[in-house]
Image (cartoon, rainbow, N blue to C red):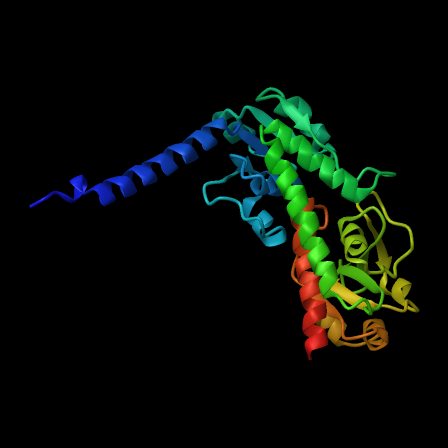
Length: 293
């Protein structure tokens, strides 16, 4: 009886599988061994198909960022503000990536590996332009500039498609995230949500000041009088649902909302192109679902 290993079709299939495995292994071998404390950098690296070896607070990344998903093999470095330096050193990364938020850790991190700080959300800069620049910088860093250009083109094309699905009659939006039962982050200029609204042709009703990350912490009374539809980005802190159920100012804001408030799952509001695309998908999907009712 002829051995299956000698059948031409089986042999070709086996060789194809072997070749694919070798190509994958070679690609992984070419990817620098990177560690990062910053989820924005992590999500972009995953989208570039050059995921970092280790990331701080992996489970929290999965709760806040969600997609693109980190590989199951990603090593958790502990708290972003207090990473496990012994574990990090044992991994022998070629480079450690941070954002300026973690600048105070640089002296300790530099004892382990060269540190690269990449900034986003700088005052006076166009947010979308910065996202593109960050993507290209990371693409160059991991030797995948073509992947960076593909990610930029794919994201912008997707948002253009999503924009085309809107009927152009959506009311202005006011986007908030609860801090407690009486205070919210309200998102505006210099932030990811505002950048996405601009690409989608939607209006933001909040024209008040914002910080370097595109939000302002305000009391609910600051939202009174805005002619807009409420968009709430989860999660709700513990006890907030119960507080809101008691009525009061929030109930009046809901009644004044131009359409039922939209509630979206958590989105990393400090993210880059992957989080921007995810927010756009969720928001347009919610607006379409409402129109279909």
